[in-house]
Amino acid sequence: MNSTPKTRIGMLVFPMMTSLDILGPFEVLARAPDCQAELVWKNREPLKGDTGLTLIPDQAFATAPQYDMLVVPGGPGQTPLMEDEEVLQFLRQQAAGAKWVTSVCTGSLLLAAAGLLEGRSATSHWMSIDQLELFGVRALPDRVVVDGDRITGGGVTSGLDFAFTVLGILRGADAAKALQLMLEYDPAPPFQSGHPRVAAPELVEKVRASAAPMLERRREVSRRVARRMAAK
Amino acid sequence: MNSTPKTRIGMLVFPMMTSLDILGPFEVLARAPDCQAELVWKNREPLKGDTGLTLIPDQAFATAPQYDMLVVPGGPGQTPLMEDEEVLQFLRQQAAGAKWVTSVCTGSLLLAAAGLLEGRSATSHWMSIDQLELFGVRALPDRVVVDGDRITGGGVTSGLDFAFTVLGILRGADAAKALQLMLEYDPAPPFQSGHPRVAAPELVEKVRASAAPMLERRREVSRRVARRMAAK
Image 1 (cartoon, rainbow over the protein chains, first blue to last red):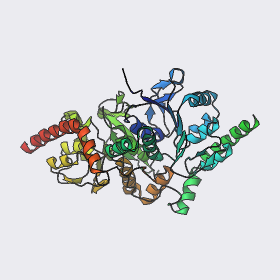
Image 2 (cartoon, helix red, strand yellow):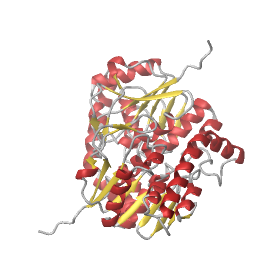
Image 3 (cartoon, each protein chain N blue to C red):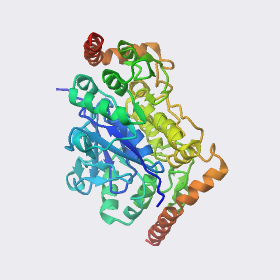
Image 4 (cartoon, chains in turn cyan, orange):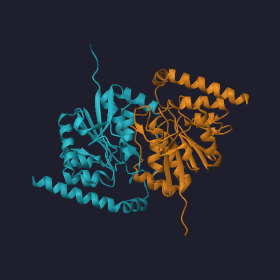
């Protein structure tokens, strides 16, 4: 009668999210031994990410089980959710019973807006990481930051490094190494331009300028939410 | 009245595919300047990849436009398609008018089965790359292989390196570098185990053994299809 209980991993999805933030980790963690990963949102209606990819939630908030691990992605659609009480409430309720509360990309800002990263170290997409400080979070510009039961990844593609790090914590290094080999995760980027540390400074400014309106909207919301939290 | 025609990128999807083979490249190429990426299959019914992720094709074979670039993924569901005339016919028709014919993971075996890689150099997932030789393809164990208008990527996660390589070819290095920065593609794998070159030999054998039944089914089909092609 002895069976290993599966580790239940709830991965938030939402309209205008950056789909790869979750789909990279999903493809890793859904294959992990004794893990069950599912996509969760307010309801189970199909929704579209910011590149138009359709995602179908496996689970609705109202019927979701208590997850062992919560994973929150980012993308343009994360900004309005920082003021969406239904979402913040779901994250807080899950976090209260979860063993790990995690994020990829600007998902960390959503966790911060829910009050779930205060006093912790965390990372985020390089263009938005400064906003973590508004919420009393110590921002570390690392690819993956593990601060006890809070695990956060940097921008978009960091979700793969995040997922193998998480798998190492959940199931040990050998399990992570086996799956890394199965998924041939031996990256060889054709250009060295994936972070401001290595990209040309003029390119960094150009990319930042192209995202400026989106970043400004996000910063306004972050400031407003942080002010409200401080006033409580 | 001068408008740049978009580069149309058709990405094959199918039941029991490895979803990340396509979803990594999709997230890159759907954001690329003047590119339009879509998922294409026999029909537009939802289908499930090998981790249970639901994908919804944007386009059916019968109504698909002539694509400029064709991208073919792999995964367990690729094996039966090597003998599926409807699929092989679609690939051949598209390839005849496409500027680039490409694949990720064991998608290269599907291209080979359609007779689209004969005499060319190509790569594939490390566990199945030897099967390319059955089809008169020169197998190169590289992460991405560019042989003129044929571009192939290795296993699963190589799709990201493949996509940025393709973007560099389609739109130049600066466009690829800008998007690499936007998607923070600066990988830092937590373990060095993503290819037989770097993984522990006993782990390589263990992973290969765990996949043996699937590999044997694939090899049987590859042999049968190659024999039939040689007899023509």
